[in-house]
Image (cartoon, rainbow, N blue to C red; front, top):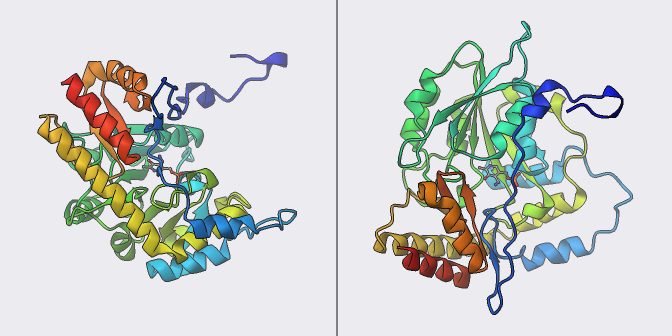
Length: 362
Ligand code: PMP
């Protein structure tokens, strides 16, 4: 598309997929509406968080560009050096910083390759495209898991970054410790492996990988975590990566100055200080997730291992139809083409209405 005066975006921009954000529910007479389309936390931020940010006033000042207080709090909370933590505007900001730093175009002008499973988080193709790198998408197994053998086999001399998503959005399964380690040992040590753990707090599978344990052993690994899901701070945009100085020394160079606002930093710190309450809320969502999953199994539906705050319905060509039926019940859910429907775990009433919809649909 040529703009006024012949201005054109660089070629890659026109090829980027648009991010399709989860839609809000459409009102239906007599029904409370619920948004189950963006894997958000249905609960508001902790009272202590709202209280703390309500009293901030110094917005004429820039925030600390290094988020030093938050990084100190996280260092203590996670048991890692503060130097290994890089904050961003959401974990997406931290991911973009990793991609900007390590992937783009080679010296020969050809695009670097970034490997990730597909389907996975919708923003991956956009973030990879934005830095001018090429996406190499490796299909998930039929039960929604990463095909790590195929991902390892796809590595070439052009591969710069590999994205692992555990639990995988939108399908739900985790990566195990054993398979993750085997995978990392099988790829060249100059490839950066990003372990995206946006839903880490919801994981209950005992064999699930702990990204931080992997980061401690492998200097080419970066772990992504966020305050958007378990902490319920999606609207404030704060997340981070954890990696060794081998990576962070380069990451700092590509930092967006002031990416994390004062409010976001303060909210994240206070949420960490009240972590027992976060755990309690997460457990209530995990209980709901397990109730929904059990209910679907009772109906005879196949649901891949659900370890995030969402479930995946393998509805194929019926996905759009199902999402419309949900909409008629004032529930917004997310259909992904002709593949499936992802439904976030929400309020108890929302989850119950969703299960009823599935029962009627069966
Ligand atoms: N990674 C995954 C797997 C996600 O699902 C999301 C949010 N949907 C993110 C990263 C980004 O979250 P945020 O930028 O809000 O931290």
